[in-house]
Length: 291
Image (cartoon, rainbow, N blue to C red):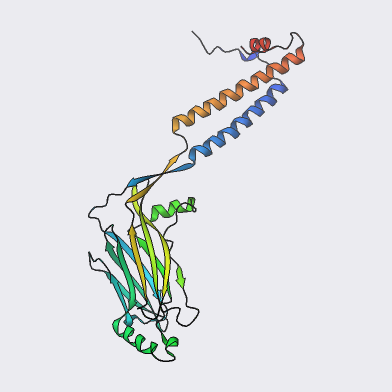
């Protein structure tokens, strides 16, 4: 019943060949073990679509926009659907600009948000447009979107984008800016069409969006910066998991050890047969000695 019989150390003989083969086998085991350990620790990303269910849910939207050439007292912030009072802050930016910061809430449905000149500025703009040099004095909506974020946090998506920058892009409008290069270019309606998508990262809900930009150039319309929200009912789930589970990892380790030792022992027996010359080198002979 003893499957693990041993031979006394006095009956064993160490050889230089055995030492070399032992060293080679240990090196190979270490190399394959390190590769298996690296693959085990490496996380693989899987994606799938799911139907988003956010009924009666308010989504927080945080914005920070700089208008370079209009003072704060002449700017109006308008949201199409109001569910809670908007938190709004206007800060003077340099000599003639304004930084508009705030938080508002929206339901997962189409919505629209605008920053535009007030009524008195629009009337003055129309009067200036009637003059000969009016073009040089038109309203200039040159701007920079410092931050635009949907949801209270995008920390998990941010961490995911660091590992998969081509797959996940967080708040792509952050840092986007427009400067009018010619007179009248800033007197436009800047439309940012946002496609908002729900995203689950390892089961935790966050939001991301993509955008298209269109510009309407006309002196007959009131200039503005308008964000059009298009909420997608289909969300994307991202799941990061290990390449192998622990039991599978152990199975590979045992297979590496057993396979390498069996092959090295097989090579050792072949070398001994070649050097001894007692028996012809055949597969049956090598298998007999290995057993």
